[in-house]
Length: 296
Image (cartoon, rainbow, N blue to C red; front, side):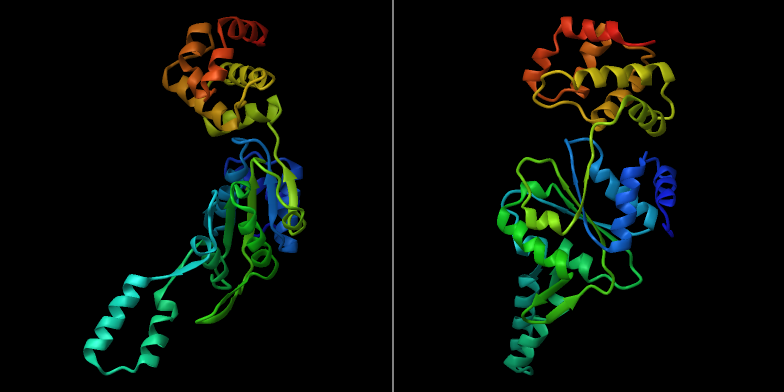
């Protein structure tokens, strides 16, 4: 799909049920035009990963996701050799006694025996194969891996000693996300466009709920969004994100609830809060106080 303007990006994302404001549409548009990665930061559950998924759907592109974690190494992210197949090939060739050692080595270190991990897979796609590369929760990876990403995102090429250099025929759209569990190095940030995704305002979150959950009544959707908005103002260890708002809305719809009341909130609070300490803080007095402030 041709996204030749900011408005086109907004419309296309909306057509795939993602409520995209103009600042977000602008950074997506510029990323595709300038072929620069985007670094999305924000609290967990505000829709950072969902942007990549929806953009891939909009572009008709393959979504390749690299989930980062502590201890993630280059081999896991880039490529590995298929050692079992290589060993089997060597044994078969030796049994046949018809292939030289040099020939065997050339054969086993060919692309046929290469296992492409997410980064290499994204780089090795053809010119007519659009790709969205999602490097999710990059803040959970080690600083050494972050430094490795600098080279990849600068050149979009990989050097494999046994094969040579593989260059991207077409740059993938690259989206990095961070929940800010640690600071991302300035060098990596300079390679990227930056966008902060915050908790949505009431009107936007209400629109998200009505869009994502068509069967929900307007009054219930309004109450849920107001209640979650108030919960985010509390001193919780983990404030609820949009993901929790949607989970709670679906749960209430499934239970056949038309409005919020204290028993309903108490019974379903685990859809919104995920830590015991937060559940303890959300006692009956707090729930009643918030409930009394909701607009009908």
